[in-house]
Amino acid sequence: MANTVSAKKMTRKIAKRTAVNRSRRSRMRTFIRKVEEAIASGNPNEAVAALRAAEPEIMRAAQKGIVHKNTASRKVSRLAQRVKALVA
Image (cartoon, rainbow, N blue to C red):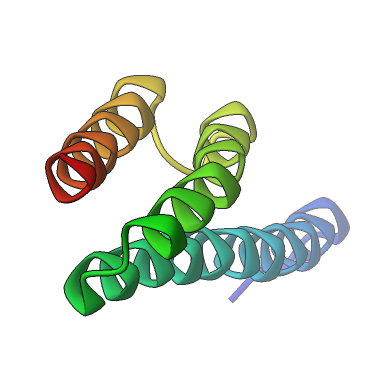
């Protein structure tokens, strides 16, 4: 348990940051899930729309440090690849 004032303050800051990061990660995963559900349903128009909404969310998560930039790019790339296969 934190004893000093500065350590107590850091635990409060960490708790706030953790809550924000958890929310952002959850939001990103929700958008990814929507794309995957659209792909599973077999509706190309819905899948394209979901991907267009998800891509900025994924990249924003990378920008905020929730996921690594390469991880975000990989996720977007693989989703786009699956949507493209569905459309074709």
